[in-house]
Amino acid sequence: MILYPAIDLKDGACVRLFKGDMDKATVFSDSPADQAREFARAGCEWLHLVDLNGAFAGAPVNADAVSAILAAVDVPVQLGGGIRDLKTIEAWLDKGLARVILGTIAVRDPGLVRAAAKAFPGHVAVGIDARDGLVAVEGWAETTDNLATDLARQFEDAGVVAIIYTDIDRDGAMQGPNVPATAALANAVSIPVIASGGVSSLQDLADLKAADAPLNGAISGRALYEGAIDLGEAIGLLKST
Image (cartoon, rainbow, N blue to C red):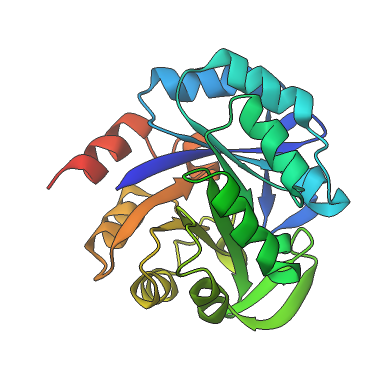
């Protein structure tokens, strides 16, 4: 499994939200590029970025911060938030992103996800954010009637390289991930699944690793910033057999 340190971008700063609430943001760094360098020096294999403003705006907002991160590190970077058309996808990949994450548009226009995965093979992931198993969109401001597992199955043969599954009620709450729901999703599809939301200790990572499911990795943010998880130890744990 891979540990993906999270850098969530709001107004150019590195923040963490509490359960997806933009009004409950804690700023951890005014220099996302410096934070990215710190994670890279600690040995991370990937970085996970979210343009929080972009998720609400429906278009990239923190482009300068993302570009600074791409210039600062050599590790591959994935980005979600406000990416809703092929032109934006192509622009980000041209700037050096390894992977774009399509969230709201995966619900609104699944055909675009298929087109993107075909046009940019190996570079398109789907972000599925859920409350009580139901998919949320528009920066988590709107909950749909779509089940997370049903949405994931729509892309089974589309060429999507990963699904990032976030349990919104666990995100930023330091209460542990929703292991059963994450494992159920991973077992429902052949697409690699990355767990997100609530990972707050080495034990949480051990629980995900021990889950009876083929998880690709886990995303953690607040726990890394607050020192609850040591990145080096976490990487070692996930790499151990």
